[in-house]
Length: 384
Image (cartoon, rainbow, N blue to C red; front, side, top):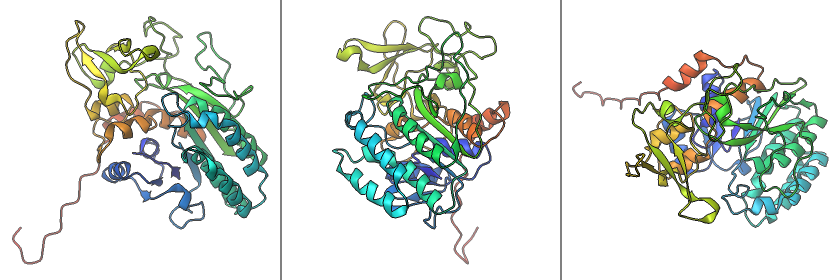
C-alpha cells in the first residue's frame, strides 16, 4: 500500500522485486503516468481512505512519502516552523485508544497554515488504525527529506510500543558515509536516532547526490539495514578512491550513456546569488533532482549552451528506466518528487526480509518497458 504514490518510484521498485502494489495518488498528472506504466492506482485523496477501505484492505505492507514541500529548504518552511506541533500530534496519536481517538487527533491537525504539513501524520494514522482493527501491517516503509527525520523518530517510538522493530545501522566507516541524525533546518533535532536514518542515494547506485530520511519497521522482527553498495561522493575526490568493497559512484554520463562531455548549470544560485550557480561536470553524479531540473542548462566545457535534459534523461538521473512513460503535465515536478526506484529496491528488500538486490534486479530495472497499449477492438463485420 503506497500512500502518496506519485508517478511510481516505489511501485516500480516493488515490481522489480515481484511484489504486488497499489498506490493512492490524487494528482492528475502523476495518475496519468501511473496508468501508462500499468500501476494499480486509487485516484483520490489519502485522507478519504483508510486501511479498511475496500480498495486497499488486502495490503500487508504500508509505505509512504508524504509531500515534502513544506519541510524542504527550497519549500515554504511551514513544516519546519510547525515541527514541535507535528511532534506533539504524533504523541497524541500514540496515546489514542481507538479509531475514533485517531480521528479526533487528525481533526486537531487541520489547523496548519499549509494543509500539506499535516499529511506527514497520515502513515502513522493508517498504521495505528490497522493495529486497532487487528490487521496490522507486516512492514512499514517511510521516506522523506532529512528535515523529517525527527518526525520519523517520534513515529518509530509509537510503532515500537505496538510491536514493530527497526534495523541496527552499522557503525560509520572511516569515510563517515551514514551521517546518522543529520537534519537540515530542524528546530528540534533528533537525539541518537535508533529508529530512522539518513541515506545518501549515490551510495546505492543512483547517479545523484540526494539525502533521504528513511524509517523501516517490521512487526515482531528486526529488518536488516540496507547496506550501501557504492562509494560516497565528495567534491574533488575521484570515484576510484574509497573502500574497496564498494563500487564507484555512478556519473551522469555513465547513467545516461552519453559520449559527449557536458556541464550542468543549476537553476539555483549559491547563497542566493544568481551569478553563482551550481555546476556539475558530466563525470560527477547529478545534484539533487528537483521539479526545476527542466530549468538546468547543459553547456560545453567552454560555456556553449547545448540544450537541457530530456524528460527521459531527468528520469534516468532518478534511476527510472529510460522507457518510463512520463505523461500529463508538470513532468519535471513528477520526476523531482519521486523516490529513486533504485533506492526503493534497496529499502523494500530490506524491509520485506528479502535478499539484498543484485545484478538480476538492476538489469530488470534498467530494461523495464511499459506494457504495450491494447489495440482497440474491431467492430463486428469490418475488414481486418
